Image 1 (cartoon, rainbow, N blue to C red):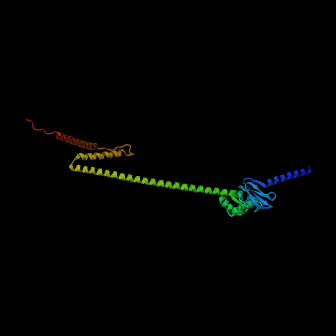
Image 2 (cartoon, rainbow, N blue to C red):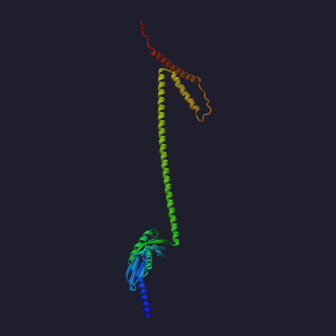
Image 3 (cartoon, rainbow, N blue to C red):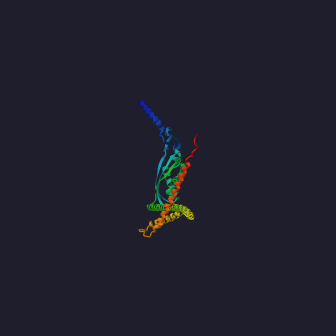
Amino acid sequence: MEMVSGFTIFAIVLVIFVIVTLIAGIKTVPQGYNYTVERFGRYSRTLTPGLGLIIPYVETIGSKMNIMEQVLEVPSQEVITRDNATVMVDGVAFYTILDAAHAAYEVANLELAILTLTMTNIRTVMGSMDLDQLLSHRDEINDRLLRVVDAAASPWGIKINRIEIKDIVPPKDLVDSMARQMKAEREKRAAVLEAEGQRQAEVLRAEGHKTAQILEAEGRKEAAFRDAEARERAAEAEAKATLVVSEAIARGDMGAINYFIAQQYVKALQALASAPNQKVLMMPVETSAFIGGLGGIAEIAKAAWADQQAGGAAARRASVPPAGPAGS
């Protein structure tokens, strides 16, 4: 019984040992991770996500490396620019482990190495720029940092995907100075725009005045032309009237002469009576001459009427057909 009991215990221990050994040789690697395998303390191979096997008691898991993209906060630090302005800068870095073995064995502390490298290059890149460039060229700063840090970190088996500068904080007195400068610049632009607007308004007013003067001059020219034409026609009518009167005088027609004198006499009286400063008109009027003029007008009217009657009778006589010979 003692021998059976000892063998049984040995068998049980052996079975337990085999089970533990098998369990120790089977490794499950989760998605997003790579495990390094060390054989007697030396790197042997890398286990990828899924089920992996190792030799128990000979091989062990060295490092469990996260191969997903990771974020590393860059703490705030002081940076002196090229024009001796001190600013506070912080940022963020995104990186991915491409080679788990290099990331585990090429550098002692990967995150600390990336952080130190990034902060050092932030001071180098931003220190070579003026403050105005620093505030207005963030994309350029990010690109330069990415190229430099990625090249320096490539032996570690990692890829720097992005480096972003989050905040650039100048000193308070410098911020106040920049605010005053910006305000002065805006006031300057406002004054320039106002002056430009006034200049354009003056130009438009001058052009409008010029156009009005041109139109007014053209109007005066047209009016003068019309007045001259009217005076020319009046002179022609006066000349014709004078010619008619002269012909009447040559024929000895006293009625036409009296009509002409009476007409001029009436026009003169009308002009005197319609004067703006004339209220009362008192002057001797020769009645006989005026009546004689009216008589001349009446004689001319009678003569014109008689001529009209004579012309009508002649027309009627011409329209009556002559009487034919009497029929047999």
